[in-house]
Length: 181
Image (spheres, one colour):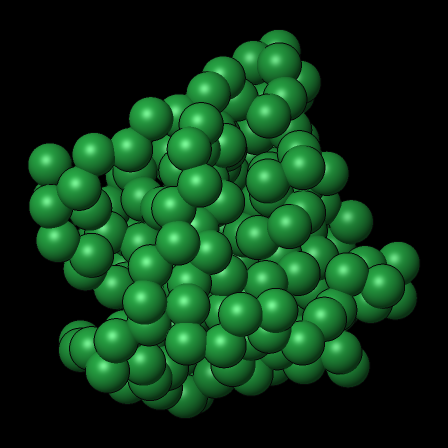
């Protein structure tokens, strides 16, 4: 099967993989092909990146997760993520209601919302399933840059159960839907 990965800050990948969080807020990288982030895939591998990981934009309680790249030149893929809900938020007044559901500060959410003069963000609720066998890939030239989606080619991965029970994930998804109304 053709596999795609989503680049996300390492600290956020840690939070998703442990089940501490199930929500990502995305706007897109500066090199996005269409100029905007789109939820192109409903299932993808998490690609922890250290590029642009900004301690100022991470909520204080998550700053201890910040670290330097433990294996430069390699990508250590921890899990598969499955999108169970996606919301395009176009009302900036809803951002404070999302603050405690994801890893970014309110200021970071507001900056992403206003990025490139396009007032919106995508809010993704994810089921995260850890890989049963470690997947370590050499980081190639094609993987570099400020893009969201990285095609990895054909590969088979085996995944475990979701990192949180389905009932808890459903409650988180419902809380997000309620928060952005």
